[in-house]
Image (tube, rainbow, N blue to C red):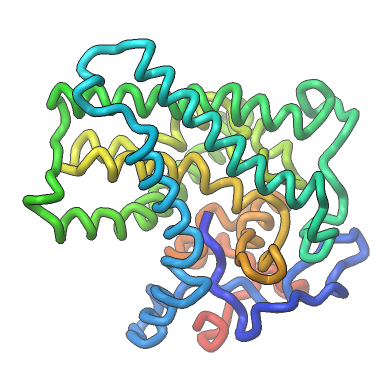
Length: 335
């Protein structure tokens, strides 16, 4: 999940913006990135690209760095992947579980176990549900961990194993860094946009009533999400969501592009579902997605993210301001 462009002053967050239900909201409306505003303002786009927080920093660079470490330290050599074998498949599966526990668990440890941020910037003042029939084991967190690590981790690994086998046997088009360095770098910039494009349309699909009632309802049990809610999905939804990587079966790319795309999709939901508005860690880490929290709160709004303004274009956008219940941003606010 992307981090919304910051307000003019990003820290500290006010603590007195709770309504009668105890829900906290930022004192500023949700803003889209300046990329799709006409006439295009190149200076604003440039600032968005390189500022902190912005397109590159910190989330996309962090996820790219995680993918680079995974590639150089834990990824099996592509030559080993020509045949299915327990050793390299197990290597990938264990690595993916470790990443989930470090990334999702890190957010949960800081925000929910140690409670280092208290309820400052927490969208819903309540903590995850306990003794609730809505969830497996009557516990929201245990339920979410089961669906995230126990189910989504397997599907994540299956996508990776199958695609590496296809690369290794030259069944899908590849790309060499040495022959096409410019194209290689452009692919890395393109992946977050492709992720957002794909997510919006898959998300709209699973809100179609037959799919919602049989599939997506499981994710929406998390009205008050926590980090582990990010990939707490029905297996069919997880397969649809991670199908974002199928583009690599068609468009020439390097296996590293595939890895970045897959890890971006598998790890990114932790930051979009943890239930807090950044910055956290003494104001050092911008994080959270009030944009997506509103989707969990109201269900029929904010299906996409905050870079490509699909929801504004299709009339399903809520900016989070109390008087608007979906009020439109002014041109000044959009910047």
